[in-house]
Amino acid sequence: MNVLEQFSFDGVFIQPFILDENREQKQVVSDLIDLCTNVDAYAETHADFQKFLFVGAHSYISKDLTALFSTRNYVLCIDDGLRDYTVLHDHLAYIKSFGAETCLVHFEDILYKNLIDDGLVDYSMPCFYPSNPWANYSKLVEHFKTMREWCVGKAKFVPAVQIFGTTNGDWIFPNKTLVEQGISFLKTLNPYAIKYFEPWSGLSLRGENFEGFIEHPEMWDLIRQ
Image 1 (tube, rainbow, N blue to C red):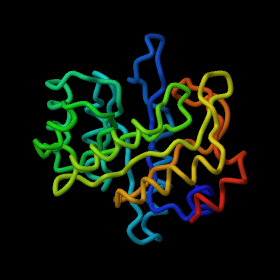
Image 2: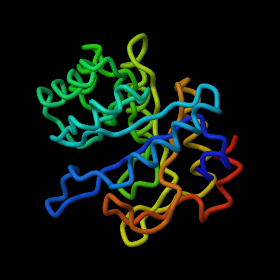
Image 3: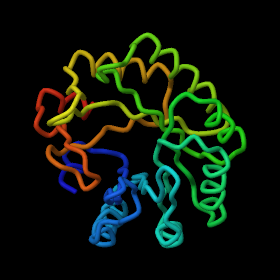
Image 4: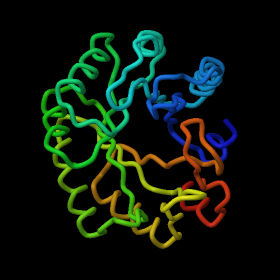
């Protein structure tokens, strides 16, 4: 909650799943309701603050979370990693059946365009990872231009920019120049918003070792701006 206030964020994405022994996201962190109660109270005192909650990932969707948070003014999100059109279509349609808005994390693949065309995606969230060790920056730029076109008149474009690394993996924490370059490019696409990743360093509840932006004060003014 202090981070939301410190950086004057206009919204928050909450990923409540813990990876199980099969690396599936089905178990929900025990204090989710307390966290979201605090977020709800914060939103009441900050105009236009938006709340996003992941209710599914890969081939799974939590029907309990979907039913509960569809009544609490949350945009309900599906995480990335799935290329089964039928399953994704059914999950997004299920969320829609509760009258909730949807957000889909994705990359450039025609099946995601089809889901946007079908009117099942309210917020399109591709991930802009210029510090990915296997990234080709020029191709990444072209992919994002394409995905932005998919959303015109159909979905709000909310790209997520990499401001994280990992403490024991291949992900590299980007330098300030690279982050500025990425944000400047994303702004040219006229996005609805830009998402910034995990602030904290250490083992996440989802089982990943993050190096977050809180430990990189050289990024703070850039994020606030």
